[in-house]
Length: 561
Image (cartoon, rainbow, N blue to C red; front, side, top):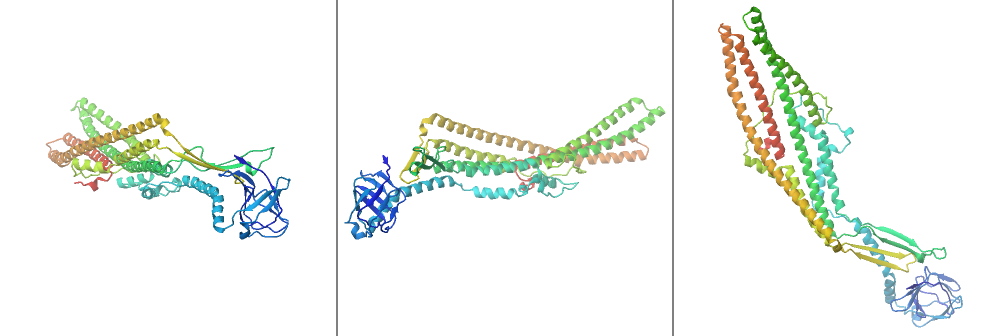
C-alpha cells in the first residue's frame, strides 16, 4: 500500500548532505544533490513514503525542505558514526537521522537499486517500440521486387506522359504484338496487381500490435498532482504474435506474390495470342473480300455473254437468271466483308489500346507460318515446365500449405506487454498478458479445415489446367498437321492442275474449239482454291499462336520446320 506525506524537516545538527541514502528513524532519505551550504534550504525533486520490501518505510526527499542552522560538511568517515536530530516544522516528534554507511561500492549498489525500476521501464518501452517496427522479410522478396521493377519500366509514368513509338500503317504481326504489350490496359492491370501483391509481404511480416500511449489523472479536491497522474504504454487492441507466425505469413504472401507475377506473364501471352488471332482474322477477311470481288467480276463477264446469247435467241433465260442470283449473292458477301473488316479492326485496336477507328492496312496475303517440329510429348513437357498459369497455381499450392501451417499455429498463444508509471516516479506497474487460444478451438479447427479445403480446391484447379492444356495441345497439333496436309494438297497439286486446265481452255478458245464458259469455270475453281488456302493458313497461324501461349514462348524457339 502506498502512502504519500509531505515533510518539512529541521535538523538541529546541521551538515551538508552528500549524494546518497540516509535513514530517519527507520525512514530512508534519498537525496541526489551534493552538500548544501549553511542557513540554506535544500529542496529535492520529489518526496514520498513507500513500504519497502523489508517492512521499512522509504522516503525520498523531494517536496521536503531541509534547513541547516550552522556550517559543516558530512564526509564519508563521519557518515558511518554521526547522526542528526531532526524534527518536522509542524512540531512532530524529533527523528534522528543516521547516515547510511557511506562507501563508494555500496553507493553504486544502492544507486542501481534505486534506478532499477526506471531501467526496466525503459527496456519495456523500447521493446514495445521495436516490436511493431520490426518486419520479417522472407528470402526472395528483394529479388522479386527487382524483377517487378525491371518489368514495369514502361508503366512507371502516368499514361498521359508516355510516348510510345508510332505504329506503322502497314504494321506487321511482331510490331503489333510489341505495341500491344506496352499499351494494352489488361497487361498494365495485371502488372499493378502483381506489385500490389508484393506489398502484402511486409504487411504480413509485421506485428499488428503497435505502441499505444495512455495517460490519466485523479483529482483530489479539484486539484491534480504528479503523484496521481499515470502515464502508460502498451496495446490493448492487438496481441503480440511470435516471430514464427509472422515468418509463415510473410512466406505465404511471397508465394502469392510470385503467383501474381506468373499471372502477369500469362496475361502477356494471352494478349499476344488474342492480337495474332484478331490480326489473322483481319487479314483473312481482306483476302476473302478481294477474292469475292474477283469472283463477282468473273460472274458478271459470264452473265454478259449469256445475256447476248439470250438476246439472240440462242440461250434460254433460266441460266442467266441463276447466274444473276449468284452475282447478287456475291454483292451481299462483299458488303458483309466490308462491315466485318470494320468490326475486326475495332477489336484489334482495342487489344492495341488504340481508338476503335484508328487505321491499319491489312496484309495483301496471309503469311506462311512454320509448322512445329516437336512431338506431342515434347510440347507437353514444355507446357508443364513453362506455362505461366501452371506455375502460378504451383505457387498458390505452396502458399496454401503455408496457410495451413499458419492456421495450426493459432494454438500457439500470443502475448501482450504493458507498463505504467506515475509522473512523480513513485509507482511503476508492469503487466504481461498471455492469450489462451484453446477456448476458441472450434473456430481454430474450422480455420484449419477451411485452409485445407482451399488447398484442395487449388490442387483441383491445377489438375484441371493440366488436363485442359494437354487437350489444347493435342487439338492444335492435330489441326496443324491437317492444315499442313491440305495446304500442300491445294497449293502443290490442285492449283497447278487448274492452271494447266485454264491454259488448255485458252488454247482451245483461240483455236475455236472451246468457249468462254469453260475458261470462266476454271477461274472460279482457282479462286475457290485460293480462298480455301487463305482459310487454312489463317487457322494454321492461329493454332501456332495458341501453342505459343501454352508454352509461353514463340514457337520458333521451340523448333519448327
